[in-house]
Length: 402
Image (cartoon, rainbow, N blue to C red):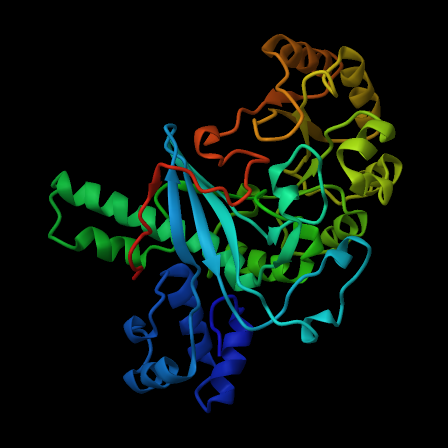
């Protein structure tokens, strides 16, 4: 009986089925997600007898940190080993729905990556939603893997919980070493009882995979991450990035609890986008932009468009002017220009001059545009570089989580 990834209502049903009061499910929920306690024996908000039963009847299946890769800029790329016994994804998801397929295939062992990026006053975690990817964007190393399988809700949530827990330990250790006038262990108690970390946490679903082709598991994970009684991250600080799966965008817009939305544009016309992103042949720009125009933005929200700058491919001044025309019918947008991150693919980076000219054309015509340099390029942790590569400066796996 797997606990990680279950909602509060599912945990309440689980407890009721065990003959326990349903409210015990809410206590497990808090222990797992708000307190980040991954050992039922240590869930002291539960009776001893229930903890003993859960220890024999339930599991909390955390991904194994196989390796960590530390970047000079402070980012950390995690290589996780996954395992399990249920639900795979299949490449056919690109062609349509896979409702009902979860009973036909066993869950395969897989590896997946997440990236932790600390900054002054905040921390960002980039998580994967699939092992590999079937969308086949030509400039992305992840596409070379193909789709291995979908991740479960628990596997997605764990990519946030494990880095948060590990780096909370680091902060506690620094605080205690600095002698903050607290009794030994006091900082651990304070952090354990806090629902949120002392710094702002951002989560971006921009790692391996196409989130909207694993919709149910992704939304189940997001409801936990965005729940004030769960992980407690604000919807304003969580972004889902899609290659442009139109039915998924329409479906996401109907969700009451949802993240911000980012669209990987990366081209200024259909011919160009067909070559760079084959998914465009199924959902061309006209359909994609219709879905964006109809997307129900909240009062504080805008649509983000990501544009990977490929030297000599999509970075001309005329490309910029076409992007302006494409986005003109939309209400509240911004564009993130992302310099291409090197990999063993037949592309090159745009020059700084080309990028700045592109940005200036957009801004001068009323489209907010920003250049976003990726973190962790030296350890293959940047956008488009996640391809399960192992490199020489790997740190040993982290040992044990409370």
